[in-house]
Length: 379
Image 1: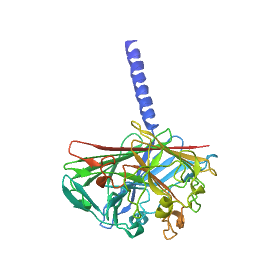
Image 2 (image 1 turned 60 degrees about the vertical axis):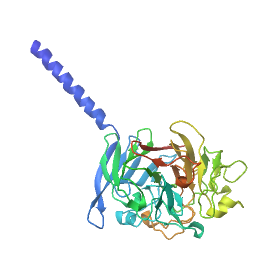
Image 3 (image 1 turned 90 degrees about the horizontal axis):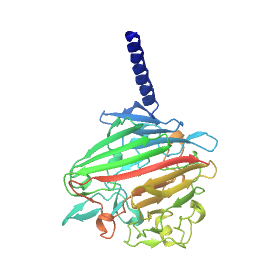
Image 4 (image 1 turned 180 degrees about the vertical axis):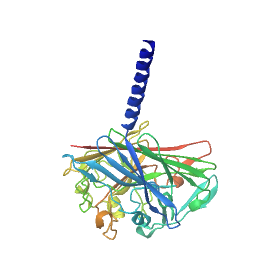
């Protein structure tokens, strides 16, 4: 009889172990494949993340890029709602920062220069809005154009690591960077960045996907309805560099504190819109502690909704003003004017040169942190 009870106990333990393993299998899945090779022969992996509701995100080691994001519309039909390319070869020629992790410093730095602890640093001037040169998104070969090392994290996500060496693109200090993408069963895509340095430097690591919630990138995003939890924005000069002032959005075409169609006022006779050719500005988010709601975007036709939550002080809303049909993307579609938009949570543009802005300086012993949560639904 004792042997019988012992056998029953062993079976119970084995069944419990099997159930535990089954529960583990039910966590969001990650599939790993070879995406292609770099020009120098290095292999590039791509990871497919899926959750229990059928949402799918694909991310790659090249540029720590979000290659695609499939979500359902109000009738349950899945579609990719990001702009980009079908193959690694396309991504290697990516000049629009589609889906990329950009850094060391996302957005613009005036004249490609900044001074830190009394020393001036010179960066590439790789952008010329209004004919005025500036440094954009980390330079000629920023984080979007390098090969990261990716591994599944075990919780439905993938972690990417990269060492940006001292002097890379003109920045001081060895910067050790980690970016993770996690797709949860709550239909959230969580992008998280962290970094440490061995010498004083500046850091503003940003996620740069282009969205079209209709799932049809041949259509305009002007009918998308946008809400921003932002009572102020940063006015710029003709070079799209912030002047240092914070301007109230009230009674201007920059006011998205209530749900508003993007195209309703984009062509208004308003200086900020004229300088940028539309929306391409940093909005100052409502102050608060920790992760909080920054933006809500809805496509009225498909019913798709995307909320963005972050711990950052600003969000750059770019309405695809420079898309002009010269870029051929997924499925052979030529991305026309304003067929995609960016909502990039961030530190303020040109903060290394603006003492009144939140400091972007990172010193040894400190850790840079940035979390951006994309929450998907349909209604």
